[in-house]
Length: 194
Ligand SMILES: [Zn+2]
Image (cartoon, rainbow, N blue to C red; front, side, top):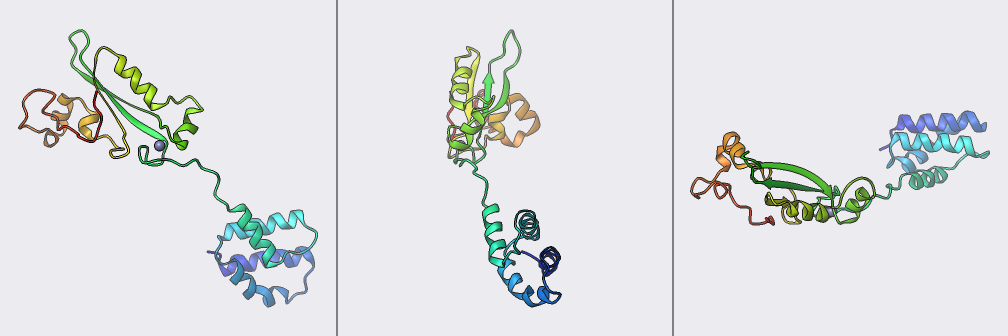
């Protein structure tokens, strides 16, 4: 919201640059404030500055309004989706069995979503999530792959962490009623496992 002070500054600039008579700013200040109060101070002052550099004739309040509205259109941002919560990023967790006697591990990644926001990321060095998940599934050591879905965009701690670490850090998240190492981690119905 524009302040009276910013409007007053804008009018002083116009008066000085376009040779308005001394009382002009006071006479029009109410009209200008009403016409521009919805905008930010910076927008109004930038528009006046732009006009001063570009136009030989003094602006009307409508000129400045149009200028601000033309300049304040939101930049074209691609639309995201529920899977990536609008960010374009899909979260992926890869659970692998221990290689050569090591314990099982979990690595987490982000990849590009298949919506417009994600596609914009994928035009750069980012890989699309489905191809990435397929590759992880092709690893013979893979136990499970979890990834963001529209109904479950953020992976749970159990999905991001290997069972031993999870039990050590957050025992409350481990369901002790179920037998077996993997089954002790609460299953997440909404996520696609492998
Ligand atoms: Zn998306």
